[in-house]
Amino acid sequence: MGTELRAVLDLVTPSVRRSAAALWRPEGLRERYARYLTEMHAVLRASVPLMVLAAGRCERPSRLGDYFPAHIEEELGHDEWLLDDMATIGLDPDAERSRPPSVQVTRLVGPQYYWVSHCHPIALLGYIAVLEGNSPSPALTGLLAERTGLPRQAFRTLSHHANADPGHSNELFTLLSELDLTPEHRLMVRTNALHTAAALIDLLDNLSEAKP
Image (cartoon, rainbow, N blue to C red; front, side):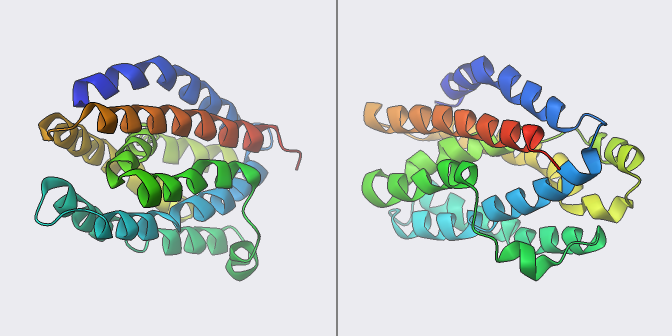
């Protein structure tokens, strides 16, 4: 399944990359980065609760049941890092955290609760594969600091994921290759991955096109 999912995502990754490149263009970048932090916090604060939900629906012991608790440990507190990044650039973290999520965020994150609660926790791997498989280049942090004039500590969360996510992504694809999945499980992972990619593109495009 790992090789199969990589082939599927290879078809949509160029579109994700194009949307990300438009987001990071120099004009108006400082304002867009502030909005990006708010949107990413809305996404990331759901990551651990989603994996807790998925872990609770897994058979234990099992490879999948062991994966989620381990990944939870790796992701704990990253939403708080984003609040720190917000404070560094002069945003009020409490005010930003209290904002209702955008339609684009709910379209990306919301279906995961359905997949896990009403289908099977394996489907969540399609979501994780897309998010971690489209991490930014480690060089992006320096470029953004230069383009925005913001201090490097304002990019702590982005920098961490740029360096850590490729390894996490490889681990996930290895797991998918080793799991004995039914045709139904494979379809769930593929379908959710493609939906996630489309929703991520929509979120990035909305951020890129929003007026200051």
